[in-house]
Amino acid sequence: MTPMELRNEGVWQATLPAEDRRQLEADDGLPNGPVDVLVVGGGIIGLAVAHQLSLKKQRVQVIERGLPGDGATGAGAGGIWPSDQGPQHPAGFAPLALASRDLWGRLSLQPDFAIEWRVNGFLTVNSNRFGGDAPSYATAAQEAGYTVHAVDGDQITQLEPNLKPGWAAGVHCASDAHLNPLRGAASLLRAGRKRGVRLATRTELTELRQAGGRVTTVLTTRGEVSAGNVVVCTGAGITLLSGRVRPVSGQLIATAPQPPLLKGTVGGEFLTLQLKTGEIVTGGTLREGSDTRPDGELSERLQAAAWDLIPKLKGVPFERAWCGVRSATADGLPVVDRVPGCENLWVATGHHRNGVLLAPITGLLLAQWLTEGVVADELAPLRADRWNPGT
Ligand SMILES: Cc1cc2nc3c(=O)[nH]c(=O)nc-3n(C[C@H](O)[C@H](O)[C@H](O)COP(=O)(O)OP(=O)(O)OC[C@H]3O[C@@H](n4cnc5c(N)ncnc54)[C@H](O)[C@@H]3O)c2cc1C
Image 1 (cartoon, rainbow, N blue to C red):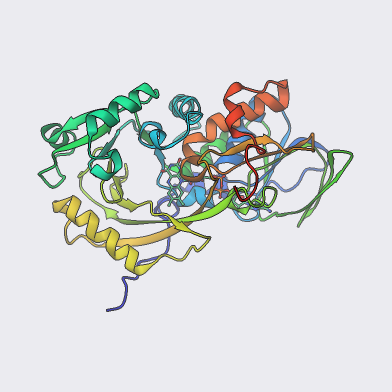
Image 2: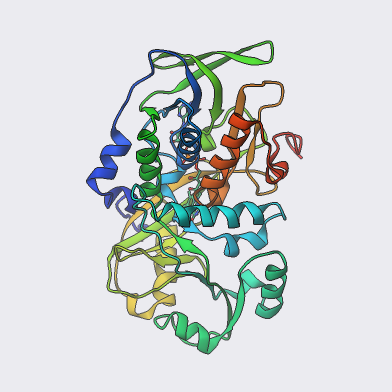
């Protein structure tokens, strides 16, 4: 039997409103004179950094080798899931993730931020994810600062009436949220542009020349840029931290819009959710490496698992499949730091499965550091030199 072949196009690209598409495709070119900060990479991290710097009155230029959202940002699931994700992370994750979730919530109230924000929770029914003992797992997670509660079978049915019956226990993260990551990127850009942020699309960083502990020359495929500071946010495309960040590909599949079937995100064998626009999305797999070709056999497994989880979905074909490449570190936390030995070069990468969640706090803390010299305590676990390559 040949593996299932689905249309290879992300659901976010396929459903993006025209104004957001214009925002992501518009090319402002390179500046004529010097800028305060050059941000390299137009993913959600680079755009959040640019947005926060613009709030601090910095002249900011972003360069992106393709279009913003071309990387992991346009391929993600859009989960703002600090409490679901947090318990798997070192302690430094909690303050960053919880604050960043709230920053997204506040941004969602601003007119420029049409991001399909919903606080619709995350329900885990796969007992492997909570070690079989939901109350103990929830207590430990609460002690670590997260909003996690154990639920029984009746509560699972109340939360998600369309799941297959028979669950004995689960854990629920009521304050976890969801947004459209590509619209998030477009919104950060829209708000940034109003404060002077410029974006050069199809412009690749080719060389950073350093002398005397500073970046002195920045070369791109469209010429030289003169910048006081350079922040590299190239996701899995990073070359500054060789050995510390590795690529991990992930796959999602989606149906056409369906009538309401799910309220929040469900962690079964895979994560499954229904978008505001009605599509059922499932996947979020982990495959070491940078392969972005959807795997037909995996699509088939994902579809079968979704049909099993939601009986009313059975027989509804999934139509599209797509992959993206995350940047992962050994301890699961990102690297957000000044590059050791270079006083005007900064890096923000390694956000792995939580870059959309962590984008606003990454931008905020980096902008404070660059403009006010304030190094927040929360950045200590994110230092670039916290481990040696290969360990
Ligand atoms: C399947 C999947 C599901 C996910 N689900 C979630 C989720 O639910 N919640 C969540 O928070 N996160 C999720 N993530 C992770 C999230 O998408 C990433 O952590 C996040 O997008 C990283 O953003 P970034 O800006 O660092 O990288 P990217 O989005 O990859 O952006 C980097 C950009 O840099 C550009 N670039 C690279 N090199 C150069 C260069 N030399 N010059 C100029 N530009 C360059 C690239 O073209 C790219 O656009 C998921 C990821 C995947 C793949």
